[in-house]
Length: 401
Image 1 (cartoon, rainbow, N blue to C red):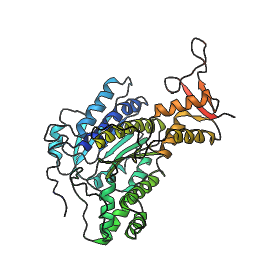
Image 2: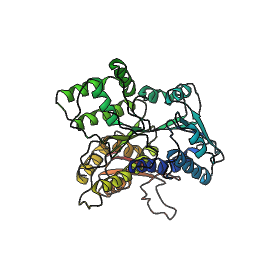
Image 3: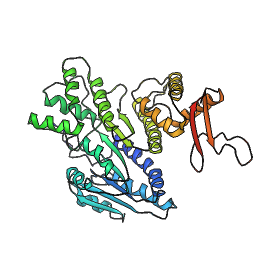
Image 4: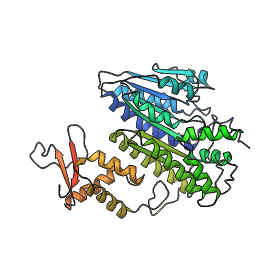
């Protein structure tokens, strides 16, 4: 039986604070950087909700308006053309009231399906940031994510992917029990639960959301006890992200679990074609991951750090993997590209600052070669910076290049 979620907006959950912090902390530097390009920004929240919870907490629309407003305020760009569109089917009037103080916020009553149709007709040099926190999986269309990159100058997407909800719906489509997977009823709730009595329509909906029928093999493997629920959810999410990489060079995902060892119910997935955006989001996800692990431990101290899959972080193995990645480079490469490619392949573990520190040790040990522009400081000493920007550039290569 579906859980009654009529009280969804009564109070803000711990999980909602996590995803909103991820959005807020990313939007200020992202918007500032985008405005510096001289091209406009269109921010779209396709499942906006009410904008505020009944306990007074801010929802993602208010948080986004404030974050983007702060970026506009501090930006020194001459072009500060920012438009924000918030789409909401059920609570559009309440949302409009809660956003009335933000002049660039436009509220539309409608569905994600209508929005995708409209955006697909746009041809613009502007930058698009799309925030999606859907009610389940029935509204998703992976092919839309792949194709929308052709319509705008740049596209970034932050998606709350209900991976457990997808697995539950996939099992239901084939009448497969998922008794070894937690129900999450108390910890994490949804505004709506995906239900579809017509098996054919349900399968079509899931394949549209996933961008293929690969999920059917995963469900059959689960039915035949070749894999457990944890592995099924991981495979579903990894394949979903793999398909996104056909249009986005960098796809990160932060699994959300509120108890140690629990299967993730949600995964925050970020898509971008820019290494700077990837690393910025990676560091935000890494910090939120640490905070989530503190929640999981309920204040108890831990002697060891853990990655996004709750596995012990082996810094020695990470060092070896990072050094191996550099040694595989055919030619020297931008530092940010090296790091972005590394974190995409290795997931959330150490911060980008810690990874840069490892590269500095490699350089000092003459295991890798680092080229810097400018090569010397104003005082004539050799440059040692390990972060690009503001006229500084770094190339990383093999020691024999």
